[in-house]
Length: 434
Image (cartoon, rainbow, N blue to C red; front, side):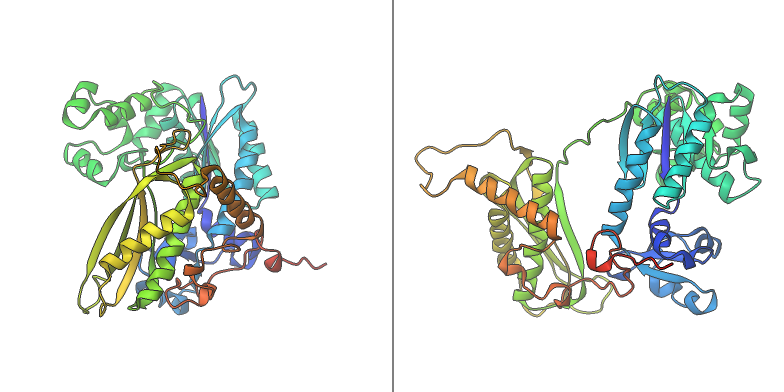
């Protein structure tokens, strides 16, 4: 038995914790450079604002409909996510943090009324953190995901499902006929793992609802689509095929890419950006205890501008796999200088680390080591670097080639509507007044 705890409109809910005046208002959170909507309040959804809607297309709603747009504050969202997940873990013995706002809980061995228990955990998260959430319970992870959709939809759209499903829904307590009725009322595109392309194919084949999907012959699903969709159907039928992941699998590639706040033409500005991107990628690499064998760097202009277009990438092999920021930055900058051409208004750059392997496997060299090239000392230096930046804030210690102007650098992202770091920066801490 599994539960899925999912924060409602998570980024918007995080913003409302410290700005309760936003409750009841249409709110969107914008992506990097304030480009498009990546989170919407229920009120914003009611205005017809789609996920990914470009800000310039909905900007007029700020005056006509009272729409509030905020720049993404990922440090705040990450901190509140940690707090929410620590409370969600109290629902059962094992937890899998699936995303920043979703957590699967293994309910094996948990006694008592699971719905009542879930309501108590939900109320605690709302009171202690301020984040409203929906909780779905099912015999498999896919059914728990479906139950979560029902719980959130029943609360947001009264009448769409029975009222008692709002906030917490346990599909395991339903009779077969009740479960079929719920599945018949749910579009097939709401199934976890069924994307747009598969949805289109299913609809063309007359599979419109979850119940239609459950009733398809498994052999035909495997033959016509894939073993992945077959596994999904088995999960919907109550056969558990997807285990709980107690620890996230190491990534096979690590990337840090950004669009610039303004077009960049000068090499020294690109060097600052690539240095920062490579440094962040290296920190992520060390966090998952991996080494990289190659460093890929790319730059490109904007395809939406009428300027001359330019797009290049280069992959730089490392002499031996490394997680050392200085080594990775040096390789990225060497690649940048090889592909840079003056005269182009560049809009985006990025660094990707490839050929990743565990740091428990170290490649050694015979008679090529310099006496001062002490790998252990470099490892301790990188640990100290990460500790200082973790304790005092990102960018406390950085490579000189990243520049010292902070967010005033010409290429820095636009975040004109970013709220303070209420829980991550002492200077931004909210003040309570009686």
